[in-house]
Length: 136
Image 1 (cartoon, rainbow, N blue to C red):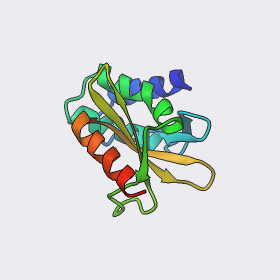
Image 2 (cartoon, rainbow, N blue to C red; image 1 turned 30 degrees about the horizontal axis):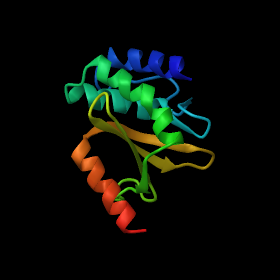
Image 3 (tube, rainbow, N blue to C red; image 1 turned 90 degrees about the vertical axis):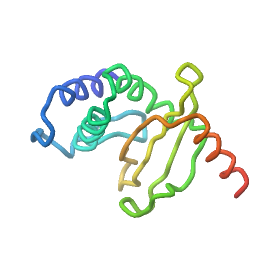
């Protein structure tokens, strides 16, 4: 799984923004129940590049996405439901980066699809974690 996703991500990292890709709806698994479509993976890579993320940071996020989706420390309804109604926000904090990895999942017919993936500050992550435990 990891090799395929990194291969596609490397391909997209070197593409121009808006460049067409083959098989945009093909699912690229990140775990047994979750994956990116090639289109959403390309969008993720383009977004991170536009924000100035390095290949190393993109690669780190991709290495952690399966772990976060299968065993998150945080799992809540995505606070931003405007674009993806019914979506879920998952997250886990990583001490080595002093940041949390956040994954937004959109419920699909067969499996859940990764909408996006990003880092957030530890303080923001722990605030979400605190709020989610208070609302239970």
